Image (cartoon, rainbow, N blue to C red; front, side, top):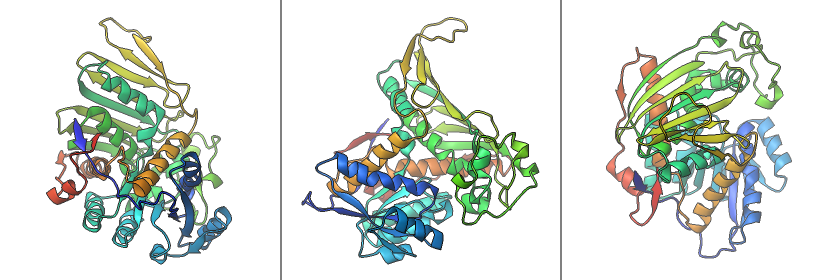
Length: 411
């Protein structure tokens, strides 16, 4: 399915105007802002720099001074008004909606780290603020730009497996204990569910591969392991890098979990998309390995990735046979062999160019809202007896704002 989106408006006809960018929240994910300088250096028609930092903690402001010694450092995001043209918001999830709405209404273009929000209602409020203000909004679903996703989409677009009818994703979150159960991520009042914080990447990619958005969702899940770990402590002032170690194993021997642990550590989602495609997503935070596996099945074959970074492959089966691990075709995955620095650079470049030069983007906030809706409503389903829940429609005026007939972007 092809839909049309518009993202951003041209900042200035003067390409020599430097885009002043702020970083809001100097936590673990703020490292993505380092790509601002890299993106600008790689493009002669783009000038951008980090001009300001905002963080409500003293430690965060100290990191801001250290990382960006020439930047203005303030405590509150509202103090940025008049000093910057755009902001990269990398604060904790439950703060996304309030900060984004404030900045959008102040005319500051927003790069909002995924998820867009932790509820459908807040996601819709952010989109409404962008539509009403006319200020550019970009949501950082960087996995769209990962090499494995780009490769799978190319295979689908070439028609190698026919028309897509089913998409499955299994996510083995081997680092889950360190990444999500030792700080605020473990508290549902701050994250709602890891089907938002973690799964929003994959729910968005499922939509992109299937060419549609989730229409009905059912969830199942439980807190199966980490709820039994009694060693807890407050890690305020620490970052994930302070405690992460592959030696933190096995899961039941983890120590220093967040005082509140009430999010599910294993969950499953079943989805019916608006184009009839059936999809599923499974997530487990206590596996020994850390990667995600997609299977896309079409009317003429299927694809599956083995590995999700450089060095892995995507295989295609399109002839009948019995069990065969080799497949008919095999395509190498390029890009980095660990992490997602390459996808982060592409994502940041796209955001900066959309704001500074008015270029269209590969991801609409409507798609980001669809990922939130699937994750948030799957969470509501799993916590209420796995009842099916239908995704509410966006207001027509919000859809119209993000749609232009002259710009086509695939979901």
